[in-house]
Length: 437
Image 1 (tube, rainbow, N blue to C red):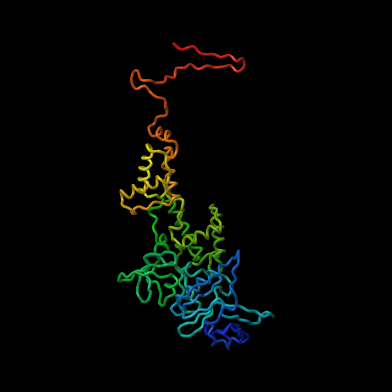
Image 2: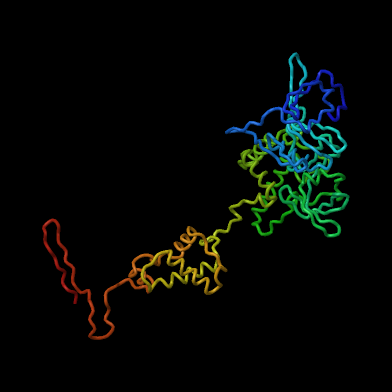
């Protein structure tokens, strides 16, 4: 319904809460002049443990007020309305719409009511009439203006695309999550939300063909990633884009989504399950949870978010410790060899003094106490830095025999020349072997 046009209002009633917190009920025809954008929500938004939906409040700059929502889909719709050029006010769950059908009374509370600049009221439901969820605006990269005018964008926004934004030609130079970085023809850069970009007045694509599929949506290169990990990430990108939009990046213009991935006929959860079943049947055991996790990574980090993190981590024995700190700890440990056994705190103070003398006071920050202890534990392995002094010095010099040695003739020394004796446990006979000639 848009401003009362499009059909008869007979048999319909609306119930709402006015500005004086009074419940009002009237016919739909009489309610056409009611400012529903000022109405309070007609029902509460419950919050409880083990809740499957995600309620909350979105701060709308359009009205300088919070708009409640019951799901992420409603939150995304509120964001799109807040950034739409033609919307001046938004209300959530503004009224009950009641009517009689199939022999019993029915009622429904629409998700949002929006007031436009020209004064027209727009009633918005985040679900179509068949109650199938559509794709999220910022995820599917589509625009459905819910009666606010405009066409529908049904192709991927890629790095390198030329678009018309605010009557000025821009080029897309980067995408990060839901933000788009644009550069105008005169070189002026700007960053806008994707929902604001595709919902702006006069937005359109100026480039004829989308950019190559390898840069779709993310626009990131994987030159520093192992080839097998990069290939796997791009394959996941193709699957994720198909789940989000219904079509893979390499789809030909005018192609139709496969039935199991059609956003207009399947919920995103059903599409996740269909993609998991497809990959499992192809020999890659995958769950719907994994598909969802990859979609979330793709939204947040782009193509790089799909790279296997285990292949990106380059672990070292000393972690990410500053090389200057490591060098100072090594020097301090070497200095402990000839000193009396101390503590880690004394070693830490010595390291601080070395760093201050070499780089200046406060120039090199020491890690936390726990991290410093772990670093010292790794670097002092086998040195007995905090053990017995004799053991530490023997380990440093490589000597394991502590007996005195004769350095010159006549110097006292101990010679191990005593012949051993054996005693038989059965007959208690003691045997002393003869000296070898």
